[in-house]
Length: 529
Image (cartoon, rainbow, N blue to C red; front, side, top):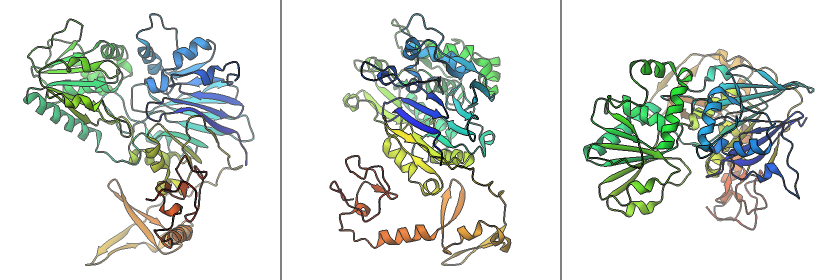
């Protein structure tokens, strides 16, 4: 075994915590994102030396991935910081209150391997989620073997209105040593994005018909611009006498998108040839900049404002009827429920996903086929649920670090042998009153993988999207299930503990926390199911 890869987490995206990870790859220390507000672990003090960092890579411009970059640049003006061309232009929007912002980072093109240090190569690929968002591929060639790491930042496989999805076919079979991947939505499954858009448009349309004013607090980059495109192009709203008011920080994001038009999807560029992307009072619904003097009139009104601003001021002292639509972030609390006590205000969540659900996350992992997986960015319970999926934990070495934890990534000395090519075998399905019978070609049993699949003669089936997946149950798994079944439910042991999942303890107060433990293990902080 060799140890040339380690990952130290300064922030892993739990709750409001930002992302900041220090990856050691060969002799180099690379900082992946800097979304933490407190930079003291990176700056050092009288008692602790600052860590050695060779370069920083910013995956995209959202604050939870980049809010610390300006302070880091000021502290270390010669530290190389890399990002995509679009991200480099969007980053300054995080510091609108700063009069003069220095150049934050060096912009890199897509799909171009660049040697950023001796034998260390960096390549960026579009990651969906937000214009300019990058999937990061790092490779070090200077040791006894190549070492590779992939970091997704936030990613989305499907297309949104202003960003094309991550090109899955371009990353297939990379076999990185480690994949650092977000798990914002855990194991949840959600409808297709276009379905989500249509459901939201229907809800807004009903609210306008009921003469509600609509307030939508959104991040200043990404979701706000997506919603404005939806409201200007959806059939429920085109040509209607509606005012779309946009506050100053969100409007600054819209202005920057207009400067980046050549980098946006072709469909968006075509749209802009026929009418302005955002600002034009002649086209209904009208999109207008909100100023301190703006008076929201009697015309049907939708107000979009920065979610980090004091957006409650618009409706708390207004006697008119307001519907506040806020974006749903699974695993995160919504706005203050006390607003719902006001008779004229109604709070309601909606989902317009910009992250992958379980299906998309599994797709990316199975296409990349890493040796190690590090899950970050999401509720700890959501990340643990992902880590405990049998389809993942039976194939990969999985880690869910907390902030401040060092994850060591021991690697096999040699690459595993090249996997056999995928083969297709045709068969038939028949059913009677009690059974469904699957008949497959006998040639399937000649495949060297058949022995493991048919080890016990038992299979498990489940739906994965619209596909039905067959999986063989191994002797080891079968014995593990049998052992668990033999434990009396009244016994105060791990099998009956609320914090025991997939042979691992998730109780941070337990001495067994983070370890693989047997079902009949015990500890002093046992909590029954």
